[in-house]
Image (cartoon, rainbow, N blue to C red; front, side, top):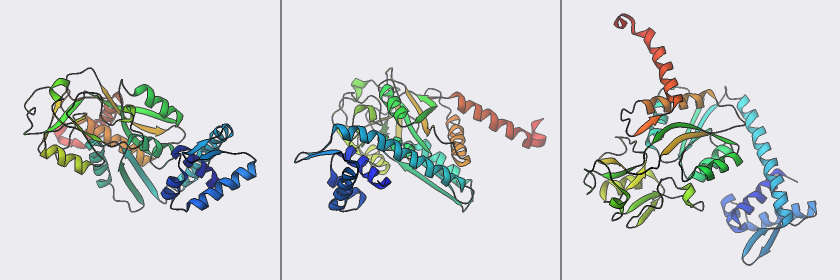
Length: 333
């Protein structure tokens, strides 16, 4: 039995298609099939039922899958632990995030402040399910997403299954982003009924397209039609040229959203935006530094109507202020 065979079994069970797994792993379907059959023969069980309609797990397969996941997760944890031993030689920070301008700005500022050739940095804006998987599998150190009354029960359960913990950064009232020439742009606030005649823009979530994984709150509010995109550039183009809307936190970047304004939505929903980390690993100094930069950036937003920073963010601010005071010299008096 090889670890790679276990990874194949897990991938096939999640996909339900041997062909799609073979394509995603860039191997032939026949090689994948042989690897699975060799494992079944070695163990004396049948993991999958195969039919013209696809592949499903047998009762033995369901039990085996649970053990396989544990073995693979422990192997990943072991590899990650010893890779971290060499962190001083080659340091790395990897972030996976929903499409938030503040996360991008904090990343840019954090990297710009460091001049270290041994460090490797990456930021991936991606789907909610992939953020969770990236942190679970140690592809990323930190994942940034939001919880709300409508998705918290499901997402917290998924986070617990993945051994992840959630730490809040701030709470925000949902807003709509619209172009400055939009018919609603001058309103101090909007109702869900006000939005009904306009197109709604959302970020694509792939197969995990349930409402609980949606990147935007108020998934069921009325709208004229829905336009789904996967990247920030397309979203910005739609918002700046047409009379649609995007529901988000209301925290925007002037660099990325020039000509776009945000309007609060009259509703009871609250977005609890934060970051997820793996409960079985210690955060690196780079990861802690990025979190501090997030808190610092969040506290720089002056509009209390838009967001409420977490207690952790306030602690960071006090620490930063304490470090600044001694350097003021004669101006202190």
